[in-house]
Length: 336
Image 1 (spheres, one colour):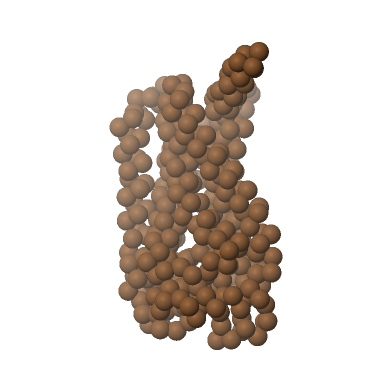
Image 2 (image 1 turned 120 degrees about the horizontal axis):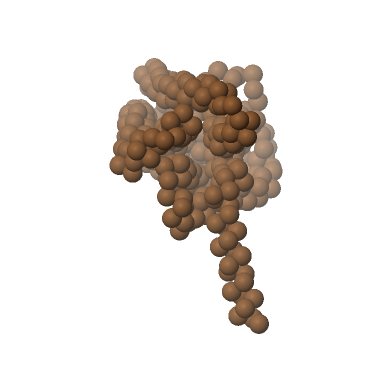
């Protein structure tokens, strides 16, 4: 049914999709891209490529600066590095394939590759949610018990927190992909999406998907719900502690300290929740709008996170400026 409707549309790009479908293996899926916007895929790819390059450069810069500067070897910046590493994994597991679809009409993706991509997207998104919770705890300790900050958040504790976030995220999402891999796919293999999103793949199965639906919504709600509640509690305690400060300058400094983290939290959860629940119940929202926002969700937060931390945290941007200025001075001296 999906393929017939594609052909009736008469689009050349959709005929290309049909050609891919005919040539592909029975175990292959076909990623449409952004439905109804196939004619402008080529042009849409340019901003996506630019954002991807900025995300890679920005997050690598964060990792490089924190590693290079001993003054940044603090719990807060270790968590920022975890976030940067996760963003690199999320973008690299999806955006190259999206660009291949948009620019080269490379719509085919093997079943195993599709399941692996799904695992990386959902698994590492859950890990990132755990890291954001850890960063909220870091801000709580820094503001509410500053004298005990270094004694509470020791290097060993940070490693344990990072491992706990990783094990929880991967542990919850591994059964999700295992359940998908066990489903029979005997009908259409055309995924109306730019990447292998869980529900988009499950909808193609010809078996009973009740367990997949229940587990998917339960796992996502547990991760986002529990993390959101704990983050909200942390910031409620932080706000109470900040408002009790007598100095206006101290209050402003505390708010600035938390500002970048709050921006990153909103940037991660808001579009993520919109995309997740729209996929299940947002039938009134045009498909191309939903898919476009879902694609942007995978590249825009990773691109903006380094910028937010770089602008709002002088401990990060000052070393960057110092490194680049030092290199420029050396170049000028060499030329002189």
